[in-house]
Image (cartoon, rainbow, N blue to C red; front, top):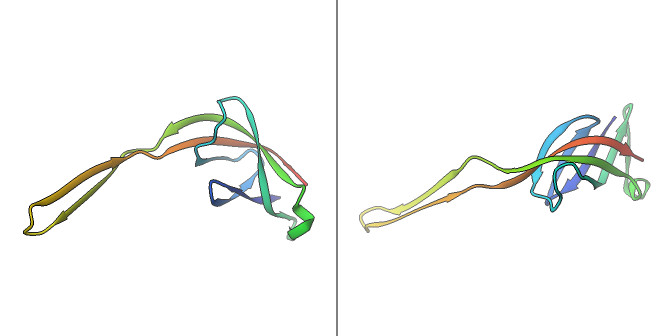
Length: 101
């Protein structure tokens, strides 16, 4: 059984006891969060629409962190224009505890 959840403007396919990273959530490590469900697949039967309106996925926040630095370098040839910028995307690591229909 798996579910498609929506968080941070992205969709993730999750299963029970799965660990995955999402956009940073306002939750501390050790707390539980509920993620809204778009679709549930149980033994090949897909449940979508109004049937999953009350469904959710309960996940435990394992921790928060930042990804590796990405360097953005822009320049224009022969114009002496150069710009260097770095970015580290914050994330939360979640562990799926339960998929509730």
